[in-house]
Image (cartoon, rainbow, N blue to C red):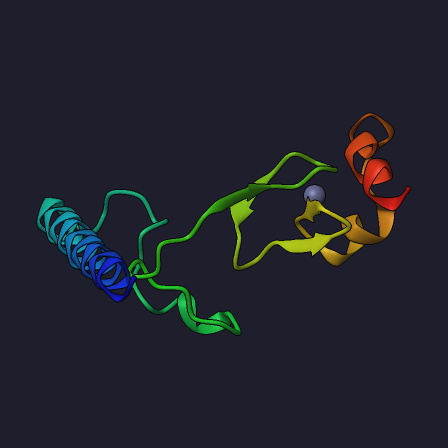
Length: 108
Ligand SMILES: [Zn+2]
């Protein structure tokens, strides 16, 4: 049993290292290509605005708001009643009628 856990940990470690290598390589290539290619990849300066700094090192799952359908990282998503929302406003609004079936099933 302990052996299995060890292998899981080794696998996780390998994955993290591999992920880190891929991202740092991609970042180096992007920097080499010239920083003027689109403003979306400007480093650190924009990240300071967030409460929780999300760097490229953190693998982030993308979620979809059930109200407006916008995609956002799970770190910024709001989870409520088994649904995903992009903002407090949409959470208060609640899921649209056609998407509410899943939530309704939970309640009963
Ligand atoms: Zn939304």
